[in-house]
Image 1: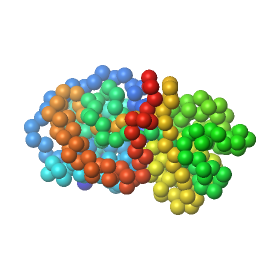
Image 2: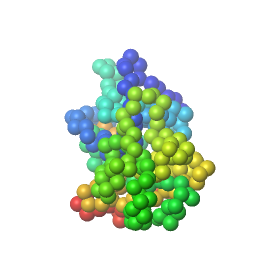
Image 3: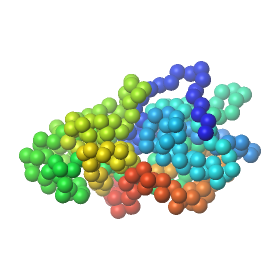
Image 4: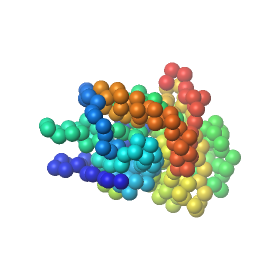
Length: 296
């Protein structure tokens, strides 16, 4: 595994794209770059965030690193990584970055939401949703759904401190159910390069600074299973009319690279059992279309 960092350009630092609304990516409206398919590849060159567990890091420990290595083995190619912090300019600085006379630094982003228009999106390989996470033994052990949670004694709900990332569907969900005042907002964009999305779970929730959190499912599941004391419960939430909580996740390549996209989709299909096993190993809450909502 080879990891490259951008050379000669400043690295913007921010919280990860998928920390808030997987769909924070959908806020950008940049013109897609069109590229042509190239001859035989010498490596599987992956665009990644260097500190965005459970998805990726420079040690190759994330879900997307594991899937990239799986694909590299299937293709008979070494895997290299071009690292850049995920934020609104991520695609422009990785997949679509090209200096005159030079090649692109990477050819695939291993995780993008279906519907993103900045890249050519493949068929999806999993669907997850935002999840409620809380510790056992705090009066919520019977909670197995959003409905159970919202039926808690009103005094109990009013006293809760619920961690959320600002400008995410979680804040919309709290507002819908009259719990916005109980929300404890965390910045989606942070100036701290060491900040990572899972801190809200394995630090503040585990240490009792929060009573519950609502975060993107893969973050919820992965970091909840890393916390041994107290034991944490993960409850996937269904989308509601006007509030989308579930997302299908796919991979992204450059527009114009039709054959490469087809090859990637072939790998998604042929390696589906291995991919699902990796997702389950990392505790990702996998849901089906029943978690969607009409007109979302």
